[in-house]
Length: 232
Image (cartoon, rainbow, N blue to C red; front, top):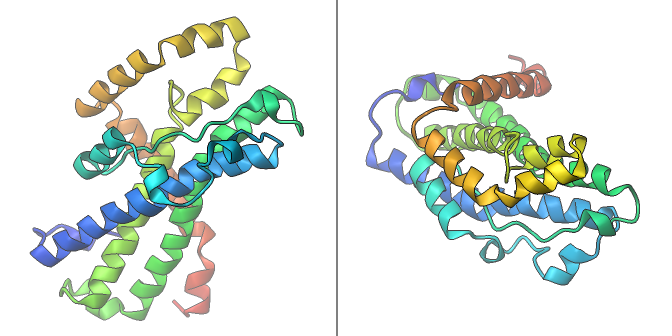
């Protein structure tokens, strides 16, 4: 939906981009982290509550490197909320690990879903103005909503990578023997450094773009009722 945004950005559009970065840092990332904590708590783990981090206050979740990554690359991360799957009384530790891990990416996809509804409503209510490419309030609102959709989906895909320390690894590693899982997690920081270097060189650009398009298309169809109600 962003094909009309290919021209060089004006100062106003750059301001909107900065605003989107702030939304990611102060809203999207805290919701992602809290989703892990809320899920752990729902499964019986008291650790998130005791950590004092089970709050949407963004200052509790800001990670310096993760915030810099958002500003430089358009995606990043926050400080993980402490959880302990072994203290989850409502399910087995391995199942708890999987559910807690998937909660963060699910939160990102839910945010993208809501933002796409807003994006469609703005577009279909102001189609002629927006498609003209003329910069105005409606144009900026549409652009901001579309950017939140794109970044939220990208964050979900990013976190679903099956390598430590991402959520995808914590999900897929429940299928590994415990000893092998512990050995791999010992090298979590090293793996993270390597992954970030690979990102810089674009090693993941194609698979992540493919997955992002797939999720975006799914959300487009899942919000199809917007077109129905708006008579499009």
